[in-house]
Amino acid sequence: MRKFTTLAAVSVLALAQPVLAQKGDAPDAAKEHEKSVAEDVAKGWASAPVEEVAKTAKGSVTVDGKSIAYTATAGTLTIRDAKGKPTASIFYTAYTAPGKHRPVTFFYNGGPGSASLWLRMGSFAPTKVTTTDPVAVAPAPYDVRPNPDSLIGSTDMVFLDAPGSGYSRALGDTDPQSFYGVDQDVGAFADAIQRYITKNGRWGDPKYIFGESYGTTRSGALAEEMEDRGMALNGVMLLSSIMNYGIRQSGFDAIYIGYLPSYAATAWYHNKIADRPASLPEFVEQARQFANGAYATALSKGQDLSPAEEDAVARQMSHFTGLSVDYLKDANLRVDLSRFRKELMRGERETLGRFDSRYLGTDADAAGEGPEYDPSSTGITGLYISSFLDQLHSTFGYDTDLTYRRSAREGGKVDWDWSHKAPGYGYSSQQNLVDVTADLSRAMRTNPYLRVLSLNGYYDMATPFHSTERDLKHMMLPEKLRPNLEFKYYEAGHMIYLNPEALHQMRLDLQRFYADGAR
Image 1: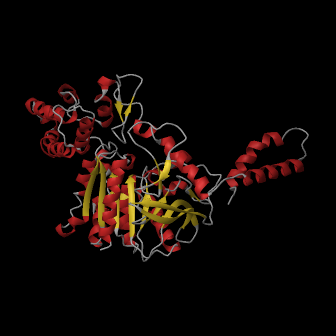
Image 2: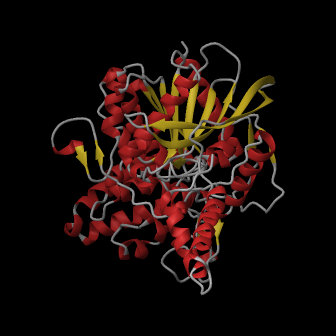
Image 3: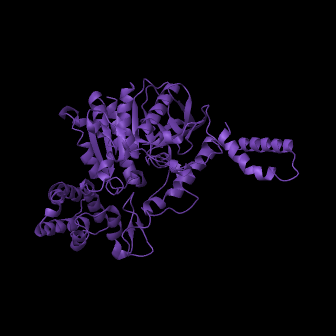
């Protein structure tokens, strides 16, 4: 559907006015020309459809030696306000297989405001891009093939693009900014999930949500929101989590404690550890204990830390991080991520990736304080975007004049509202910087059958796994519910699925998670 708003028409006509006002033009002719210009622009104005669209295709994929037939759908979901007015068109791709009461899982990336092509093209859909070693992918043609680690045998999958991203758009006179905030975003996703469930008659089926990065922040609050709306979830999967943005405030030391085990894993991978142990998990556990013990104690003392204590802690830090004792002292034992990414491989004139510290980049010089770019992001972007858009056209036949946006920010300024109304009472319920552990804790306590699986990459420097552990273990779950929270770890980065071996293991872990939920 195409439309042309009054404001846009006025703007176009204002631009055309100098031409129309030339000497010798008759007033009637000028008005007719204005009308013609407005109509021509209206015909070319690309907008999301109010009426829901669905394009389908059939396919099959072999997983563990078994061929599974599926239906692939690319389409839109129209969400409405309390009065029934359409407010947004949410774009999705779905993969469903025959069967009664099959689980349905809703997948989404983070951002905030990111499209979900990353999960769609890299993780568990029936087809995926191919990545191998942690190096930049060459330009097209790209390798897209059937996915032997698809989850289609365990669950139907629906990949949702956040409002303003992908082909998801606000409708009519709805301000896109009305979706750009923690609680606003959760409301939109809850509406979209309910609409899909209602439209496809899935209220009686098991329901799961799977978020990556900021998508895990969304999931923590969304789990509670869906419970409040009467849609009890069976499970929540958290991939590369950040549940609490408060730890990023300056003046707090929690972020350094959370990062230290990730620094250790990275130094281990790049052979910067003296007497490097053979076992990464064992080395990480040693770093975890140091971070929570002597390191946390030292940071808590601030300027009261004695020189002898500082020296002892710096030497231990050096053992785990591969950085020199003097450098650590100069940094007051507090090494920001950008500094670590620049310093560890400075002697080789290389920098580390943020999303995945296995990736190496090269700056113009080796003297800076931080890297110029993230090689773990730039190295894969073309592969994912081009492959996804090619599939939409060639497989689904989904054509639109809209521009596919990786992020809502590509459509203009996004002023994200980071405040959050958490469940509970008193000052802690109204947050200026979101922390959704209270939401997820309440969802797990009110629905004692809700299970949570935390999936973590050792080399994820965007959302360090130890910060995730610390946050989720502060949900203060009663002992009888603690088995409902599980942690899994992989030798990979933020996008765990970039590593084929890690993707395979993660698929097996998820298959077990679904199977356990069916018992």
